[in-house]
Length: 75
Image (cartoon, rainbow, N blue to C red):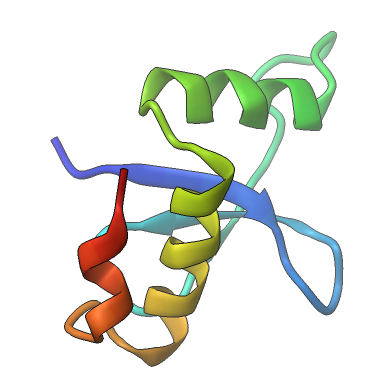
């Protein structure tokens, strides 16, 4: 299973999903009508055991490549 990361776009503040080893991101839509998107993203990040640092690294890797040295710093 490919690791997923959930955060907000640094420029637009839109919720996004980053997939490990893929460039770019996807927009996130709410998973349930009664659930806040930030709560949903927190739950998904917890499922994947993503730390705030992991998410920061994933964001950089999605822009600059997963073969950059920073990709080796996942917790």
